[in-house]
Length: 270
Image (cartoon, rainbow, N blue to C red; front, side):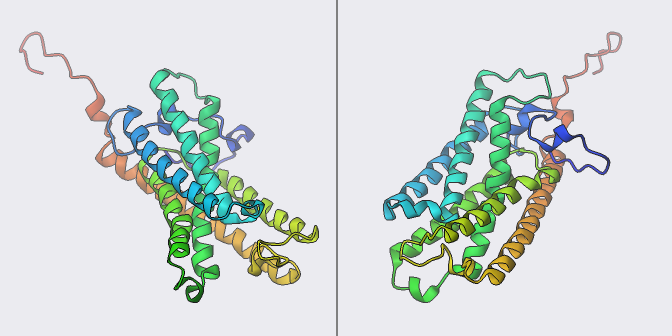
C-alpha cells in the first residue's frame, strides 16, 4: 500500500511505527489472502543469495578496508533487509492477530531497512556502472568481473524482487531515511580523508571520484548523488504505486474474500 499525503502530516507518521495492516509486511502483492508462506519462501531464497554474495565479497578482500566502501555498506544493507524480512515472515506465522495500527518492533525495523536498502542498492548500481566501472581493467580479470556483477547488480536485483513481490508500503515522506544514510557516507568519507585514511592501495581517498583533496568536485558529486537518490526514491515510490494498483485490480479483489450470501429462504435462490 502506498500513501501520498497532500495535507498536513503528523510527526508520528514520519517514522515507521504505524500502518493500517500488518499483513502489508509479510504477504505478497500477487496472492489472494494474507498467508505469510509465499513471501517466506521467496525471502529464504533471496536471503541465501544475498548472504552468499556477502560471504564471497568478504572472502575476496578480508581486510579492514572492506568496511570503507559504499558497495560493501550496500551488501550489508541488502543482507540485513532479508534477515529482517525473514524475522517479519516468521513472526507472522506465529502471531497474525494484530488489531492495532501500531506496528511491532520487528515490522518497524524491517520497514526502515527496506526503505534504505532498496534505494541505496539501486543507487550504488547506477553509480558504479556509470562512473566507476573500468572495462579495460576488468576484461582480463574474469573472477573480479563476476564479483562486480554480483555486488553491483545481483544484490540490487534481489532488493527489487522484494519491492515488486511484497506489499511493503512506500511513503514519499520516508525519503529522509535513505538520504540520511547517503549524507552520512559523504560525511564519513570526508572525515576519513581528514584523518589521513587511505584505501587498500594506499591512496588518500576511498573513491577517486570522491577525492576530498579536490573539495569543490567532491562537493558537486555529493550534491548530484543526493539529487540522484531523490530521483531513485521517487522511482521506487512510483513502482510501488503501480504494483499496488495492478495487484489490487487483478489479484487482491475484495469480492473473492466475501462469504457467500445465504439463499433466500422462500425461493432458495442465492
